[in-house]
Length: 254
Ligand SMILES: Nc1ncnc2c1ncn2[C@@H]1O[C@H](COP(=O)(O)OP(=O)(O)OP(=O)(O)O)[C@@H](O)[C@H]1O
Ligand SMILES: [Mg+2]
Image 1: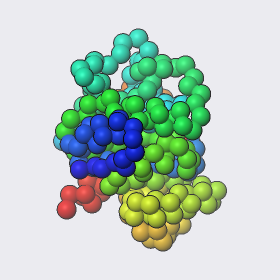
Image 2: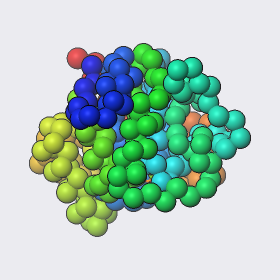
Image 3: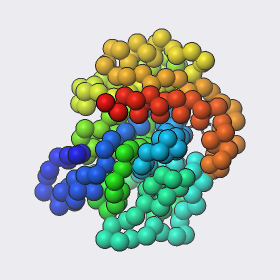
Image 4: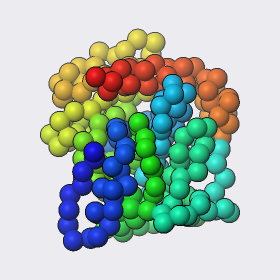
């Protein structure tokens, strides 16, 4: 269902095949760093899986992957199984793929084209099979990986993560515009917000035709729960992300 833009790299045809049984791709994005993209990606994947969906999670923060830390996956020693491609290991019911399986905790300092090359390689080798949702964690910014997801996952529904802080909102408006003009639809998730949805955030959603999926509370217990799925799922943050997941699934059920 997901299409790709064809050039002469043979991997591009393979990518289309790899994603052919994936119903919805949700890239989790933000032009701002440290707003909670990785935590929300992991929790969203776990919550959708808990609701009975077939879910994959791809860490596409190529130079600085961290989703495995949130999920408590130790990397660098055993490589995922290979069978004419790479089979993503299951973590908490979610098929999880990350370059960290190969790079471990070593730095992977790459420039623009090199990043796109890794993205193509990962997309070309990973065997997702049938999925209801593929959640894609991305690095901050409106450049390489962020542009690549829009390019390779045609028909995706980006979920932009923001905080209610004015500085973040200035930045997020720019990404909201890119998403609105290039993809035409998507979602906005407010993280580290108050108990009520922020009007400033929901007005950006309205302005750019994005659907506001709600607010996720600031939860001081989340850092100590990182790496432990049981404890992560017991946090207030996870309870709020479950609400976000329900609204997302409801929006895509029609
Ligand atoms: N809802 C929350 N409650 C409390 N702390 C949070 C919450 N969301 C995020 N954080 C804090 O923010 C930190 C950064 O989160 P995370 O790594 O998910 O952000 P990110 O947007 O993926 O960052 P990067 O831009 O570097 O990829 C977390 O380690 C945690 O301390
Ligand atoms: Mg991150």
